[in-house]
Image (cartoon, rainbow, N blue to C red; front, side, top):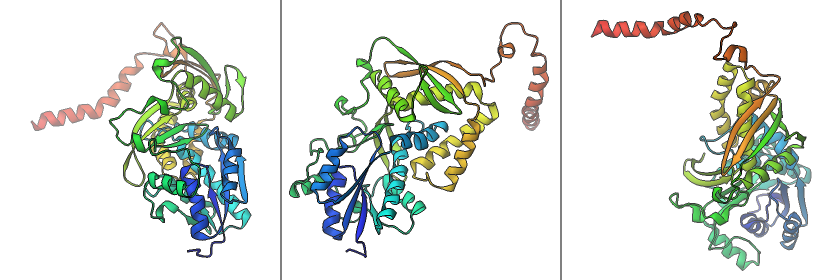
Length: 403
């Protein structure tokens, strides 16, 4: 089954799936496996991950800190467009996959490998996200997707395979749900969560406390933006990854960012996902608040019309497509004046905008005031309304004549 593959680069996390895949690749393809682990802020002991791969016979392991790249070049561009899939999901897993796959493909080319491999199942979205990226950036590489090749059909079988081969794993038959963690979010799927009527057990949550256990006193946070990008919190400038990490702690302590969603996967089925995105939720609310002050009405409305499409492109794995890049350019052009400060209040699971200010503001108190002014002639509204109502009057007259 070698198919001319002498070396394969595996996107390796050290979890159940990729640990089993590593061993399976060695046995099935008899090829050298190079392991690549991207540090996207998952908070794991990556040296332990490295040691685990070495015990499984891997000689070459890449462990790379991509946290700043992840937030600056992937998360922030996505947040500039307010991408939210099906009105709820801030796309934390979706946005991580193109970066992992891009770097994996670069390593494969550097290593002279013939193939890349991933641990995504044949039912999910990640297989699409990984493979679209491989094909867009390194089309000559062969792709190995073990979940579509082997005979194992469940994580229970993977646990049994791991036990037979002496592979240490953290998943158990009692808690077989899948978890994906990075600096932007945590997602939970499968296992005990597959019944959409059952509430997620409190013990699964990693980044947030429940609203009931959050502090009884709210806290307010000010976020400074430059051209649509957050640059400081409460006046303190930070790098992108540090800023997001700081807001994760603040938001998590107040129960911000939990979502329980039954979503439509790209492959056609519905899936129940539970998510935590504390810092991302704060940035989303703050960003929209500042946009309301600084963006032209028609530009804002036109950009908003692009959000569902933009979110779909990211969710479905088209980060490196020409259409996503085109939409991104339009979004970024609209962000040039989104500079200023937004203030939000965090309280028991809610994130509420309480203020916004900007030197680029289009809000004019002398025009908007309900008090007396000398700028706006209210009589002008009469002709404006009459012209806009003309088609409605004609329609009404036609209906009356035909009745």
